[in-house]
Image (tube, rainbow, N blue to C red; front, top):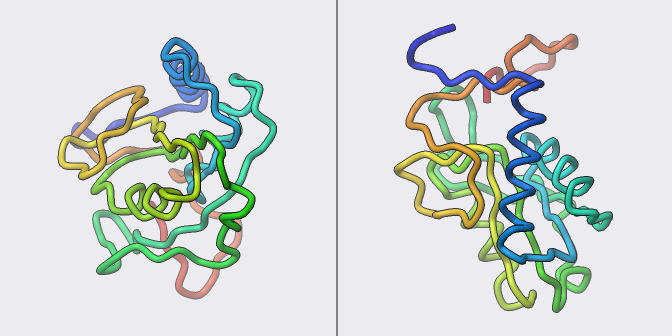
Amino acid sequence: MSEDRETLTWELFGSASRELAEQVAADGYRPDIILSIARGGLFVAGALGYALDVKNLHVANVEFYTGVDERLPVPIMLPPVPNVVDLSGAHVLVADDVADTGATLKLVRDFCTGHVADVRCAVVYEKPHSTVQCEYVWRRTDRWINFPWSTQLPVISRDGQVLDA
């Protein structure tokens, strides 16, 4: 394990996601919808969905990272974009694995604003320089994070494949 990296194991993710759900519940927030930011947010949203008894899960596929600490100039939402009619008037919990710069979370939060009753963000990790301060955070770190779902090489190689992002 590298000193400049935070390592999250599958077992620790189980504890982290449960503790994150407990924060949401203790705050009295009762989301109608959990909106995951793919790909890392899919794991978080699924775990939160079970723990908070929310079956209404949606996905926003956002592209931003192109490698370790390498990004596009701005994050972009890829199709299919969630239908704002489906979100209308709902209490939405946006779930992601990490708030690094905050740009991805800001894009999704801003997308929801004006269409939903309330939008809040839950992440496993938040970096100190994130422009979005999430309502629910399991741990804060300034290190690069090794997530259990992205530390091993894919079993299939594709052209233009981005590793460790």
